[in-house]
Length: 328
Image (cartoon, rainbow, N blue to C red; front, side, top):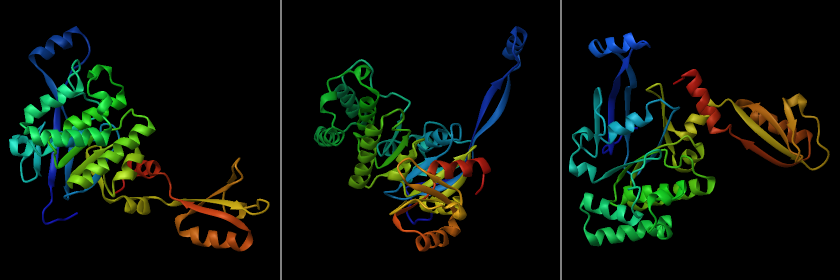
């Protein structure tokens, strides 16, 4: 998606890892000490995209697709094999302080809180690391405590927090310096539905309040649907789709589910397609996208319909179809 002033610019990005390989057995182990064999494993292949100011973009792919590797290159933790990356006009791998003060990386499966000290002390440690003036720190600290309801947790050591409590504190610790670019890698992993919703609401609020750009990876499609108008689909290191979430559904979903409730006795809908009557009295019928209008019109003409809904297929099904077929 073109822009005059993109926050993030990625062009022809590649990352290949060299992985040691050897046969099993003592002799092979000794031989590998002298003649080490390696295999080149491509993790990211020719990926290009831009991110606009204030965008929340979903970065979706199965395990091993290259999501976390890409985020680590965007944040400067690892160097690309080839290609170019710019974040806020900086090259991330240079780790320039001017950039590090404006970005953050939150990894749901990694712990950045100091395990044995109170959460408030970890926050104070981060304040010192980022050299945040006390006045600015207190203002931001109070905002984050209020937004994430952290007051009961501040005196607890990280090891005494539940997973949901820890993730709230992890996110707050990563945002004390008020970054304008957020790389969020599975921020709701393992959380219950209530806590997932709380984290999503906070991300949306932070995005609006600070016009922050967000790249979000998640295996929970509810996160993506709630926050992201645009998504990037990556599979086996290659970008398969970059566009609006609605466009993905329209392009790759061929079926719609029609749910009917009838005022009287349930009629036989088999002539319209495969119909299934549910225990609650509703009848579900699957129709091709191009046939939905004709099917609905025919049923309304023949039957007394009390209620009707037309549903898109679950986002998980659409994305699975893209990954399985590798279509672009």
